[in-house]
Length: 349
Image (cartoon, rainbow, N blue to C red; front, top):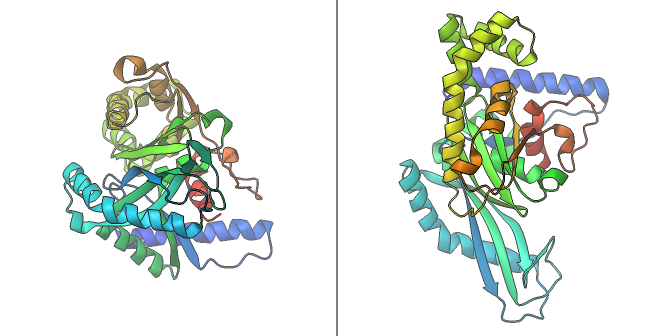
């Protein structure tokens, strides 16, 4: 993988096949009636993945008529018809990828308000002015095609492809600490995914190409190790199981990369043009977030001086047991590395 693009198909297939086998084996130890999977929910990320929030106000001609699923679907269809061309042109200008090479991943109704009141399910209700908050996501066709090819090689079908930062923020929509909104940061191996949520509505996503692999490579080069040795040492560092001398070596080695990562977060947040003030909560997850410098850097960064925060944000980890509607019957999933995969699982509910 490179920046979330599949480079070596054989290696990816082998890794996925092994992971699926281990997962099934683990489940079979707990439950006797586990069947082999036939389909897959696939998370997608990468610098060229884009998510765009769209707000549509509709004045209904017959305000006393009850809202139907068909009416909602017609509004979404019109959003696609009238908005997608201009959205794809903006993505082309921002990322330098031809709009002809882009493909819609999904379009979700994020929330609906009737006459200024947000409702959970508008079907069967009536009203005059309906506000739809829609979230549409796009990716290069070649990236989507490669995902479908990988899944087919595993003898599975694609149930759905989901933008990972969207799935993550949606999974914690009812999390008590995030009810007033939050900035969700997933530090993966190749990229960092950021989404901003305010009042339950996702304001957009941004992805930049600094992740855990950057820190591993820095340790590898500075300490003259193999990549595998550097990764193992990095993990031991996050677990606090190395001596003080090695800790100082690693801290010194990754210092400049941590600073670059923090600047990347700031620049990504700057691009949320529609956000007048940022939420005062930052939630982090992912394997890369285990480095103590990530948490420390976010806590100490001068956010109020750099961006429009009303007060210094509180930073905390996301854990799987806080995800809405997902019950871990195995009682074995307990760290933030598993948060995004579980968030993807939740999209099937």
